[in-house]
Image 1: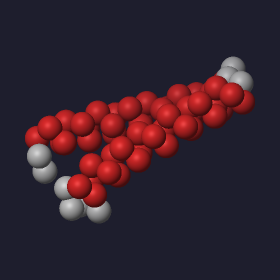
Image 2: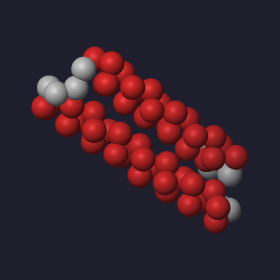
Image 3: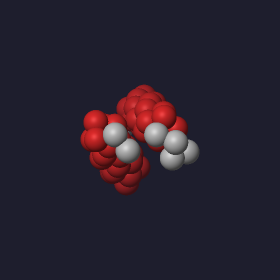
Length: 61
């Protein structure tokens, strides 16, 4: 895997995990609005798609 793509993939994974953690916290705390949760899901989806594109370009997927 290209070193630059590897760094981007690692950052995307870290960002996606953070988004999941935020969603879990929102679900348990009940402090987030429906719009906040939707925004987190959209962000997570974008990060996963970027990661998927990198993995496809590298021939991993």
